[in-house]
Length: 427
Image 1 (cartoon, one colour):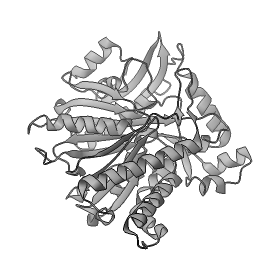
Image 2: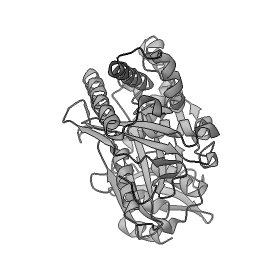
Image 3: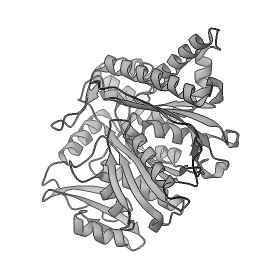
């Protein structure tokens, strides 16, 4: 069915924590062969959050850079939606904090969407639908995926940790990618493959079951999408997947290769060679950052586009989003016609180049201090008051306190209470 306008992503920006740890360092501390992490999981490093970083600061930094790099008029932003499974409050959404921290107009909807790693895709679809309802008006929304993947120390999930945020400007001017004109394919099944109870700061996962659920959802959505769209395997220039760890994208591609070979009843080109062409180019950033839950698929998209040249203009990309629990979706996008909108502009390489690698004791210390910041009374006065970035300063009187540099006038310290955020929104 034809839609009233082309819609999709007008701009993207990525933020990752300032620190990381090499998986070989983690393996040595665990007495494990590094190859188990490097080759078995497919990763190289994982992001490590500082005590002054959390899902809010990462989301705000990604959004702030998006607004600056794409010269966005803040008054045109009518919606901010955050997809996350590591929210900081049971009632107040991350989107509300971001709205205040980057100084958006009061005439703006703010809310979060949650369904494990599917949350950002749900946010993207909601924002796109809202843009379409504008009937040709210049509606613009900011969608942000922000998460911190954290598992128990010494657990099998620990080397798949990561953190980061991806901000996307959604509008009817899709210079980066436009949603394809086909109905998306979705699949839902109530499963317990991965979850995090309210009383825990770390996730729980049934690894083998989760892998099976992921692949089953992929099969259903892939078959449904090809059936409804009439597209073929060769119509996709690249295939991107949710990346809890890079090897999972490898497994996903090989499953699609098996399905396609069975469908055709003839031999396909070697799976590994096709993977190297269709999927591997999207994984270089995920290899360096680790799992960022709702943002993992969109980090892969950002990485692919940032290093892509003009040859990718107009190409069709297939995207598979999976959220434990489970909800999954397969849809496709068409890359924009102007490489200057995304080539080298998203900020992935820049963010990775500025990181500091830490040793194992430092990683443990930073993790312990970060978890301690969530408790009331953890607030500390800033030691460096003017460093030009959004910082989490702790909890004071049950209110989270953030410091943000949002204008040339200097830093502004605010707790994002109702009064503070109202003042921020008008500026």
